[in-house]
Length: 79
Image 1 (cartoon, rainbow, N blue to C red):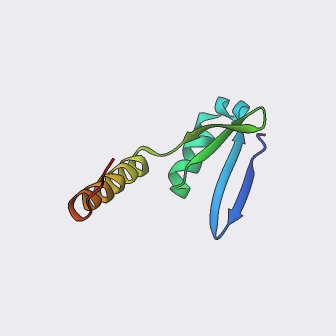
Image 2 (spheres, one colour; image 1 turned 120 degrees about the vertical axis):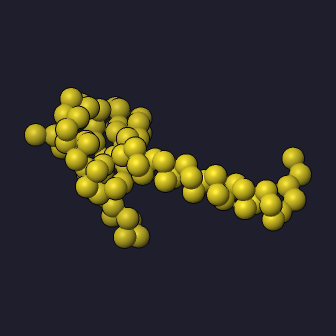
């Protein structure tokens, strides 16, 4: 049985698992798929990896692209 920590902050839920949980890929897949949220993997108590369902990753990338295009079209940015 893998220990995992669930943190609720501002209504958000975060699944935090130790790196040893990587042995149980089915469990991680179920968490990502059912909750539509990423799973945070720690190594030696510190953040190491973030795993998320592919469809949610694509949605996140599309949202970031839309935001970048909106900014590009509506604001002058000087670097």
